[in-house]
Length: 264
Length: 375
Image 1 (cartoon, chains in turn yellow, cyan):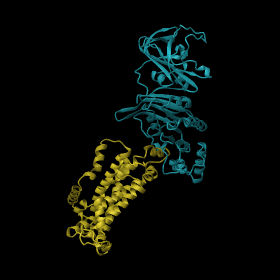
Image 2: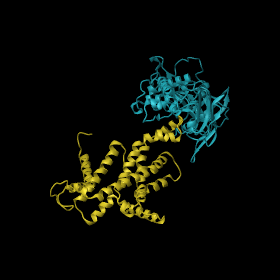
Image 3: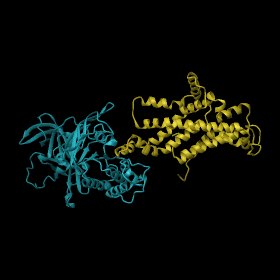
Image 4: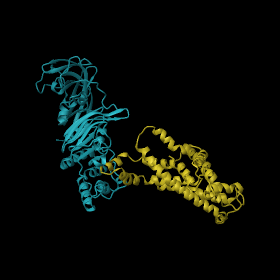
């Protein structure tokens, strides 16, 4: 790092700070609000309290929802990984016809409005005469998070030369052994990152869940949304703060410990 | 019997013929070089021998068996890659032992073989390191040990020296040759460096645009190129383009486009009036002061004696290179070995007599000469 900060880089830093404020400011407001003794949110800061966090014990439905979200996130991330990892391997290693089109199709859930995706899934389940269930919700989440798995995996695979796998082949490893002994261990960080990222994307998702939620499959964001429809007090800020911290911790783990770039 | 037979093999990638009806062969224990500019198809040929690509047509025979469509993991071929392709998550010992593990060798036997292979590439004591902790040269040695420890029927080396610096390259080249001849393992060595090919191989297959344009011993390829591309690619040569003229006492005449008449040795009979290429190695050109006495008594006014001027001098240590102008348009480079300092007798701007023996001037039909190294 340069010892002297030029005018240009000072400007760049100011710009960066501005962007961070813009992006993280709302989260900061929520976190500060969650410690406020005032009974409404948002409001002026009246005093410091942990009381709203303590209230979590009086709202078992939030703990239930948290548990549902964790389960759905885990299933979605697992199913998304099982589908997404081979997809990423194929995209990274082979050239085939319509590769661009197929890639766009696989990545579509990233850009498709989630409300449309949720609606489409609801119609599909209805057409198949399947009830909206916990599993249905988990599967639609899996479809949505799969591209994140593919992306985390691809960022890992681009650094892996195909000749590494070829070297293993020349030494007598068949396709299955190459996958298990070479590709999988080398891309372990990418797989873990993809899983965690997928879990987070499912964990914080509201629009998809809106269509398919049932009393037994109410996720945390749905529960929060429902709570806020009737009242807004710092309790919801406390719940929100916890999710924000959990998500930031997960992202930090991926970027710093696993060293996989999520959004590059 | 030929241990390796590459018979009329073609490989078509979508819309592009990477290897075009190429044939070459190697006897058991030989080292054959596939040499050519990048994009000539030599690596694709190697990859087909390894089993990473399947020929579109033609056959590959190895030790008396056809292997054209046999999967790579069943061929028992050792290969090293240009980027080494070590397993980054395994130690040196585990890298070298991987092939033995696939062959279900016992722990003790495997350990002994790995130790022997590492000793052979002079890497003893580094077993516990990871590839990222090794230098490029060390990684190359690990890759070589990993390839030979399985006692393969054939060794393939893809540009094994190109990522090493000059000093190491020389050392590694000698070592590869030593290991190869000690193990008597039939080896295909792919390189774009003709000098490397000449020094290391028993046979050379020169490739251009997917075809093997000449195959033979290094001496054959160097001294008797059968093709204008080979003549220009192998060895450091002056190339003069022109039109063939009539034969004069065993030599073919040629007039360059710049109007210089010279005599040369035809590789194949060449029709007068057809486009021709004269190839004169830098080392065979003689440059002297115009008034210097003839050392060998040859006719000063004879063929292939010209007046020119030294334009530039490149001092290369063991030799000196004179870049001379000849006539209005031609440039001739002469490389003169330096035995002592007095050998550097010329200076830039000197008028000189430039000559070369007609026997050292190859005249070949100038068949659609592409630019050398056009990619």
